[in-house]
Length: 394
Image (cartoon, rainbow, N blue to C red; front, side):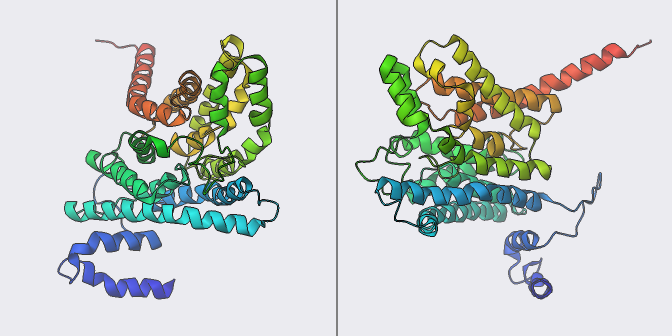
């Protein structure tokens, strides 16, 4: 590391004012501060010295995503060879290698396009490169179907960075989670590539269904009696597979175990809000319970409330999307309200609107929009309570 530090110190004058590559100063600074913690402080106002900065914070989130990423690669291979009827004859390493080959290009496209736009905006504006895409660049591939065409991933990523973040001023100014903006754009612009049975399994055999548990659950809406029971027994009874993640779905969203490992990392390091995570699961469970008690169709009454928490992208959204510190709420009480409403709305939408079975995306984006309003009312409520305790004299 000392040799690398000396190399950077030697090249640094070339990128400073008056140097040969002064126009690329923000690009050089981005790579330098990614490798080494900067030794600079603010010039005015409050000075805070800490061992962690925004790049280190983003790096911890990426680290927390690795369990879901690695399992997602394994599951891509698992689902492919399972659909082809070759699972028993294929080793674990071959399953993972197949998934790696399929997933890695999506990650590369996401980072190349996203960071390219970030660097371009930094150069045009003459400011430092924002660090936020370190996380968004990993989140976008994990919430995409494995069969998503690379050019579509590139277009969705570009839309998310430009429209979802840069038009608002860059990292720290966006009102919506950029990764979810990419998924929403992909969902509405290319619906055939985000729905159906073919998109969730790479090179799926024609004779294999490939439907996700949410798709099977949605079929319960019009099913009654033996038909509903048959769907439950054949497709929705193996909750363990849903919890482990050996089911069709987006690359990084299937394994609740891997996601919870990431949640522990975020909570232990203080990066992610446990209040939001717990509240999202609580809201989903409450809504699921209400459906169990008052439901009017088989989907509402036959799917246990806790099963909603391990289906689709519910757990992934609760841990990695809802906890975004920029687009979420900032107040302590607001985090409980915000998280609870996300979980509540996610189950409500997925059950009542079969057109949006993966409702976590819509629930989070909706609550991103209202997060500032929630914080406003929480702050105003605190002010009113404090004024009642204070005796004002003229």
